Length: 113
Length: 139
Image (tube, rainbow over all chains, first blue to last red; front, side):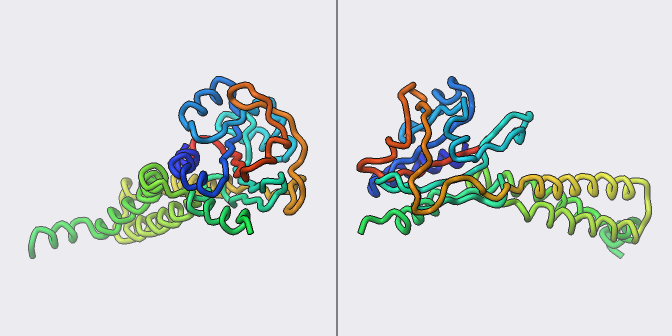
């Protein structure tokens, strides 16, 4: 969980920008609860019924390590009015935006005039 | 002739072989180091590139001196590096074709948070902006 760990470690930087980080888990409910304990400054969504990933169309059926359904790594910036301001998707499942890159995107895309 | 020269004369191409093996295994080791120690998450293209260079050196060593061990090394590391290339290509993510669009309201949804509280698109409105991360696996 390198990605979430980095975001958790920078939680104060996100707070300064009045931005919260929502991590969407498609794992089971107990895994999501544990994740919330491990990353207390993130908001963990327990989306084991795929209601959110289906709405956003980021499910990657059967692409998990053991053939399970997983999310395609995707980061979406949403402003205070619930309007999408940016969507980032890496070209490889092994690649992610670093926390610094996410913060830079927040400054650029979600800056309050 | 010193001992190193004698050894090289007895086993021509051995330094190439050793360097090749080192490069072939260096890529995955570097990936582990970057991901889990340095926590840098980038596409590990360098692993199969280093591995391919390593296999080329092992083949050169085989050309210099043929032995069953060198043939075995070529086969093993070619398969190993081939797997790395396959994994790299298999890691490609599909292009996004879903309903999320810039400057459009977030699509409607109704799900729950880990604590059981409901969570819908209306919860994205308020005094905070949101970074929504759909994460995957151990990364």
